[in-house]
Every structure is written in C-alpha cells, then in structure tokens.
Length: 260
Image (tube, rainbow, N blue to C red; front, side, top):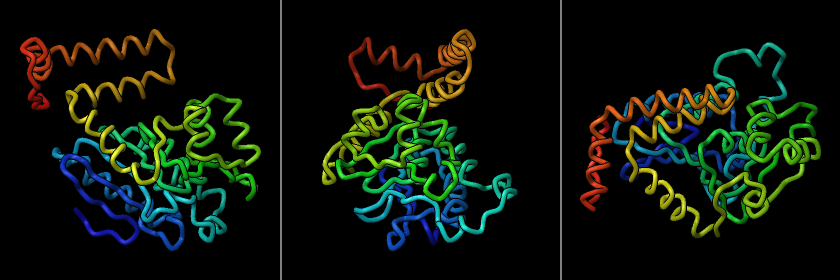
C-alpha cells in the first residue's frame, strides 16, 4: 500500500482499514485528506485480495469531525463544481464495488457524518456522536447529508437533525436507524470485523451485484428496480460460484468461491 500523510491504509487478512489520521484536529477532513481517500480507493479497487473496506478515525475521540473550517472559509461558489470535492469523493465511496463499513469510534460531525452515511453499513460505539451542524456556519450539509440521511432515517428526523444541528449519541443513532449496530468502545473493532467476516463468507460476485442492485434501484421506480434485480440474477445464475454455492449447501460443506 502507498504511504499517505493524512490517512493510514492497513490490510488485515481480506479487510482493509482506511483510517483518517489527523487526531490533533479531531480527524478533520481537508482537501488533501479527500485526495488521499481517492488515491487509496483506486489502489484498493485493483487489489483482488481485499473483500471489505472499513473506514474509521485515528484515536478514540473522533471518527471525523467534519470539514477543515480554515479551508472552508476560503470557499467560493465555483469551488462546489470543482472535481475532487467532498460530495464527489463520497459518491465514489457509496458506489465502490467492494462493501464498505463505517466504524464510528467518536465524533462524526458534518462531513464526518456524511462519510459514514456514504458507507454501506455503519457500526458505532455507544460514545459516538453524530450531527450535521453546518447551518451554524450558514451553509448546508453539502456532501450528501441532506439526501442520504433522509433516505436512511426519514425526512422528519433528518430535518430535525439538520435544522436544529442536534448531536445524537450511538444509542439514539441506532434507535432511528442511522446505524445497524451499537456496542461499547472496547467491542467496536471486534463487532465490526464480525460483521465484515459475515460478508466475506458470502459469494463475492453476489455481494458486488447485490450492492449494485440496491444502489441503482433505490432511486428509481419499483418496476425498473425489479428489472435491474432480474438482470443481475441472470448474470449470477451463469457463474461457477452459483454452482459451487448450491452444491456446497446440498453437500453440507463450506463453499469455495473463486469469483467466476
């Protein structure tokens, strides 16, 4: 893996951890960090040994505490449309072909919350804090927060969080469906890896296409989504992995998938 200044990328078996490494600034997300995230994703995408990507923050206080305000202060209207912005980076994470998990170990505010929202699954420590306080700066959540949060927890709860800037803890995030698991801080890594291992045990082609179908079909009408689902299933029916999975089930053994 490459050496980065603002993130760490570490492999652990078939898992890859991408860690925001600016703990002295509560892992604030500046433009250099975003660029390194893009570079890391390019490397991870081509590594066939990586089955799942886990995003987290360095230390035990912050996942990512939002955008770097000193850089944000300099933004102009046209900066929104420049390539490599936070919304574009998070779009790439959302559509990344490998499954992604946000391991939220502390503050996930603003752009940090939006990073977690862009991941497929969110697992939080009880002491994690989620919030979109951008209106305090007279801006809005502009990296997907207005759209992804509403789709996850409903329009009413999303508007409540966005308009008031309220900060919620891990248990409240679990109650409203923002995260799928909440555990003690000491159990967070083990629980995240447990979930990741469950994904890794599945047929890798099926995992890839299941993610694609859900993401592609979510914002369309149901009939179109069902057609996407049917076409993806047709592809999987023609694979060696489907044959292996069904045979292994009938023979009561563990399948040996080869991604073909």
